[in-house]
Image (tube, rainbow, N blue to C red):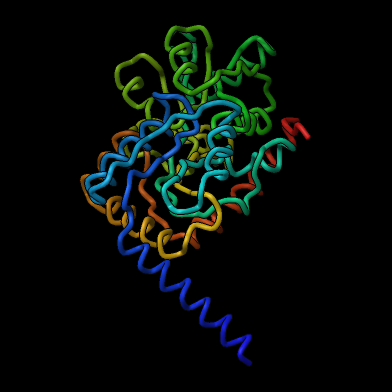
Length: 320
């Protein structure tokens, strides 16, 4: 009996310590790892949230870009960090499917503490303005006429943009050749320059290029039109029935972060995301705010892993 009493007291003491830690959290700067290069959707959102969290917490939130291997390098660094709540990372569909696609992913889904889904982000199907394509049907016709003659830009590694294109290729029966880049920013630069013809890109970070006429958006990946670009039809409306290929962004940390700190970080982020000014800012960038709790994000993350792993397997992207 004394043995069990000691265990219970130990658990209660640990819980009390966690609660006290959460009340004083954060007591030092917090690192937020962005697993992609500067200029892309992940980096843009990370810096926006870091600024607001720094104000809210009165402690600096520092964005650290750790790009490479389709987001796996940054995620590995995240899961191997101390689980004290002072390191988090941005996560997206690529991080969800990596453990299924790669033996050397360096982490499993159980190695993460899930904090919140920040936003749902439509992927825009983009072409260079010089390409004689103004609709999805135009693109499909051109791709069928020049089999393998068109190329698409992607950071590869099972990224949302790559999987959306592979899903389109599967459903439309076309072949567009992948050109892999180290990061989204570099891919966008080359598409604007006309060195690649086609790409799916998360709306965050590219809406401004569409508005400036540097890139042409011919479709949006969601089943509903995107409010920021209401004249751009969905893939479903454009004849690729049932197509849904959205990206998303969330925040996670290494497994084992004290529950009170996870809940604190999630609640504080939700408060920031609920502000109308933040909703409008993220919508203007190309995202729709979500702000889920840790349990909801855990379930969503794992469901996305199943969905997109199926697409990747069919596309022959499986590396293990």
